[in-house]
Length: 287
Image (cartoon, rainbow, N blue to C red; front, side):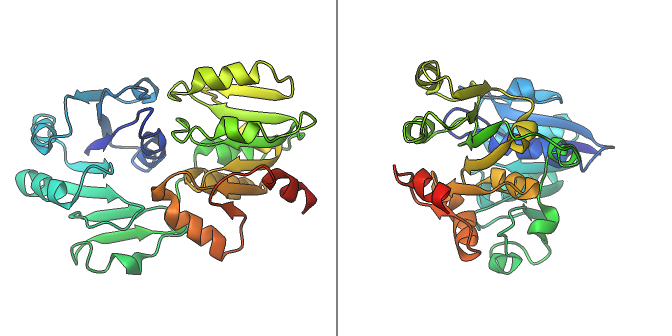
């Protein structure tokens, strides 16, 4: 099967779409896989281990032309700027299988809908998708990277007290704010990427702190998490991985598309916060 993923990454929108699509691609070991991406600032196109077609725009006509030229049989759309109208145009003009990823309960015109969040409720898609649409929702479909599955089989010494991962691009630039509230007696591991528009600011701050280790574009995130006693993350895809590794955590909401997981975690009595404050870490270490 000729399978096309349509997703983007950048310093503004983050890296999560591409990262989860790379995990999803492993479900199709026999497919001829390609990606279609815009060349946006801070993207991680070079991290995609498949052929990538560079799009000039997010115009459905350009994607449809690519689908026809490459004889694509199934397209996976993972993009907040691709809506029901866009999907319907692709479906009607190509006739291929359309799969859409969603985590905010939007309307979709697709054959398959995947919401892999642990909080996903397929009943909420009633009236939002065609009646024939196959709904893949919840923990049975959660996308966990192989590195975490492998890491969980290994015993590790705890090297860090705190693990901080506020998204590869940290669009809210919350990492420095968190670091400024942590005592120098804590050993801290921070992960980020070169897609972080505030990377220079972060590097300058960390250079003065011997207790903080900054990992940029790390290939061993699962190991670093496993070596940590506690994690500070966003209520996003990272939650699935932290829960899988059974690491205590607090999740700080930094974007509206995190609302669903945020409320799910809150309802299930996990520690979630609307914002970080100077007393948070003190409260956590007292508990």
